[in-house]
Amino acid sequence: MKKRLWRILFGAVLFIAAAVMNPSDQWFKIALYGLSYIVVGLDVVIKACKNIIKGRAFDENFLMTVATIGAMLIAEYPEGVAVMLFYQVGELFQSYAVDKSRKSIASLMDIRPDYANVKRGEELVKVDPDEVQTDDIIVIKAGEKVPLDGIVLKGKSMIDTSALTGESVPREVEVGSDILSGCINLNGVITAKVTKEYEESTVSKILDLVENASNKKSHSEQFITKFARYYTPIVVIIAVFLAIIPPLVLEGATFGDWIYRALSFLVVSCPCALVLSIPLSFFGGIGGASRKGVLVKGSNYLEALAETEIIVFDKTGTLTKGVFLVQEIHAEGVSQEELLEFTAYAESYSNHPISNSIKQAYAKEIDSGRIANVEEISGHGVIATIDGKKVLVGNSKLMKKMNMPYYEGELIGTVVHVAIDHIYAGYIVIADEVKADSAQAIKELKHANIKKTVMLTGDTQAVAAKVAKELGIDKVYSELLPGDKVEKVEELLLQKSEKGKLAFVGDGINDAPVLARADIGIAMGGLGSDAAIEAADLVIMTDEPSKIATAIRISKKTLGIARQNIVIAIGIKVGILVLSALGITTLWAAIFADVGVTIIAVLNSFRALNVKKL
Image (tube, rainbow, N blue to C red; front, side, top):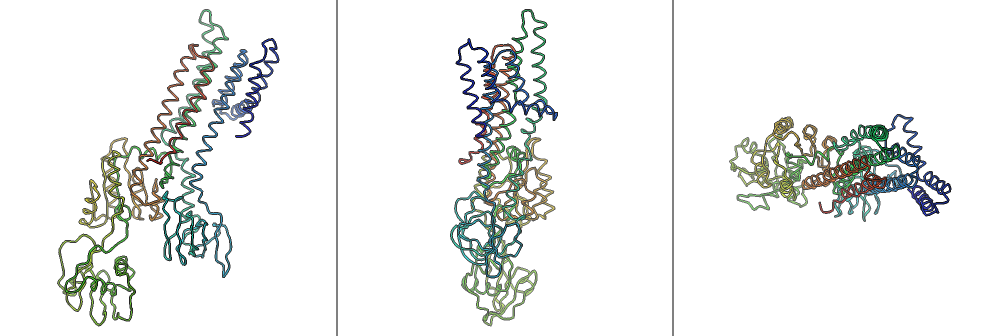
């Protein structure tokens, strides 16, 4: 860029010197124009010649070369040099624009770790993250990037996840916490066990997604590519006819006048404003989305998102946290504290999620000396002796098996019944907790003109109906197997319009087939399974459903900018093409129609990067 800038400045000085010279020094004046042209335009002429040899004749280099050399041949030296000079200014501006966009995204994606501190015996060895194996022990010091995904074995710290999720608030990690590569350790020293090799780590997958996103072009980009392929040869043929036919058939028409018009026509016809600005718009949109913690795997998915009519959600882990918590304790004949204590002791040897939620609610140390004769009955529950009392903890099947009367009313959630010494002592209701922003997410989607929201879940009808009502979801299907979910999505695909799209949002391994079947698959990337992230077209790194509405707003804004650029570029060009053919405009207007329109379109494309208020 610096070399091009100096060439432009030197060429401009020679051009100005030639322009202000005394007309009597005609040959010296022409020589200065020629030298100015060589300084600013030689590389364009060389590129045009190389492309002709390779069979790619009709590009902007060819158009500029023919137009400018043609202008010089008909003695329009100032305009011939000016066209090339301003074309190079436009190219410089374009290079700056693309470079700025790339740097903007690169800064967001500056998460590739340089090294990992691997513990070898009592020593720490700095190695390339690629060389670290699963189960190796790594140490992350304050200020360092987390090099690989792992689980904390020792230490406590705050980590900055903003590069991955877009969230500015640091997250606390301690022993047992999962840590993701690409995060930054802010204060403490953490010792962790590696759970994934670098190629499978979060940071590697994110970088791969961003680097490959540009390979999947949107319909708008495909249209422009095809348009330029046919458009350029057509305008060259028209320009040739414009230069030759009128002087032969029109009385008083001169070749010099019509060649000048043809050259203006060629300059205007250059499609670089479209070819550059449309991909740049989508590139900016993808970068803006990544700032918000939404990874888009291609421009085509970003464009499709703007046309979404139906959004289908999985429940557990998508709209809910996927973490079971004690929601209600109903005690009979004992206090709630005693009921919870007996239940926690009976479940102390189990690692089942339900057992873990009860122990978490109890939150006290378990004295194993108080427990005896623990018997786990698969699919039913646990029988244990605690403080000499026989305690039954389990579902309704266990109560029936032991001929124990129990509460049979309808309860929403997983119900754990408890009996102490053959007397029913009450029940504990455990349920998944709805994510804090799920209701807001559904509300925002409806404001974004989403016609229908649907929830698919394998959970019971009662639980599903409660969650759907709480969130304001239009339709719910419950007690589904993974295969049933695909069938329901197939049915819903028939309900959308021809151009409309259906998006499915999920996080589990069993959601992968549905994510692949939907028009747009959206995965929860923070806690979601690798299979779901792999099958999805968009990944929400924060696990927040509300980011879906944000992604839709970004897609609509990006698509709007791309369409504006198409209208601006084609509209102005067609207008000046007609005026050039009629001889009303000069090469200076042609320069504006090419370089000026390109700069306007590029500046407009920059708006796609601005997503702060979305």
